[in-house]
Each structure stands twice: as C-alpha cells, then as structure tokens.
Length: 194
Length: 33
Image (cartoon, rainbow over all chains, first blue to last red; front, side):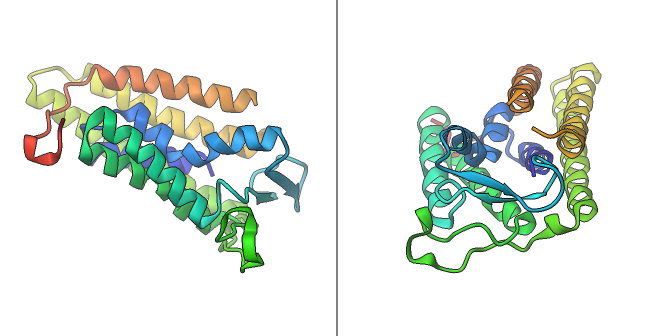
C-alpha cells in the first residue's frame, strides 16, 4: 500500500492545517523510507508468494525492524520528535501519529508477516489481516482512501482560500494534483513491477 | 527504485503547491512554537 497512505495524509492535512503537506506525506510513508536502505542491503526482504516479483500485493514482506510493532512505534516517535522541534508540540504529535498510521493501514493489507518485536525476537506470532490476497479489494480500499483524502483536502484548501479572500485557482490546482497524484501512484503500483 | 524516486518528486511538487495556500494560522494554545 502506497497511494492509500498518501490519501490518509491528505485527509489529515484537511484538519491539521499547521503541518506542511509534504511532512505529512513523508510521515505516512516514513516506515517505507527507512525500509528502502535496509531492503537494498538485504537486511529486510520481500518474498514473492503470488504473481511475478514486484506484483501488487504479491509478496510477503520481511521488514522485521521497520514494520515490527515496536520498531514502528520507535520510528514514529523519532519522526514526531523531529517535527516537534521544527513545528511545535501539536504538529509533532500529529506527524508521529501519522507515521504510526502506516503500520495500522499495513496491518490490514499485509499477509501475516509483521512481527511484534524488532528482528522478530522471541518468534512471537506475526501480524497481518491479509487483504492483499484479494488485490481488487485492497486496491479498492486504497482508491477509497485517495478519493476521500483528496476531496477533504480540496474542500479545506478552497475554504482556506475563500477565508483569505483568494480565488479558487490555487486550491483547484492543489486539490486536483493531490487527486491525480494518488490515482497515478495507485495505477503504477498496480500495473508496474518495481 | 525509479517508482520510489518518482513518488518523492510528486510529494515535493505537491508540498510546494500546498505551501502557497493561505492555511489559517493555529492558535497559540494549539502548541505553536
């Protein structure tokens, strides 16, 4: 899931306007950002279980540090603290929470591959509800998140511009870009192997 | 990897457009520095 996370970030921006959109979008994929270097160095791995390698939702992801429950909490706190220093307490809390939302949304789609403790210490049961087994359903959920997030963001941007006596051009550009971005990311995730 | 870089480029563009929107300033009680 990638586009769904961005949709969620756009929805949060519509309510928490002090936090920069780019920071919310970075926060929502923060666990994946840290995952990339660990994946490239084979510390964390992906095993294809259905379809070709890289197919949408077709892998078991052994991100045993970044996507463990405790690891996700730690990474979210770390990012939240950085945001707190830059933008204050409320934005710090919001960005930390958005970072952890990644783990919660991933819990819905991942097969049972998310450990509780970093490095899968103790071999506790791995978590994941496995919606990726039904790619149409998980893609539908992502599209819904994108549509709702873009609509809420667009509406909030239009309201802010109206209150400031500005015209509708900029909110229209920002809203339509957010919608197009979400749909494009979902389409690329669905139809192209990384 | 190109996909990931593309996503970050999009985030930068979106963030740039968003920065020009006249978002309301939060109140002091909401934890602004």
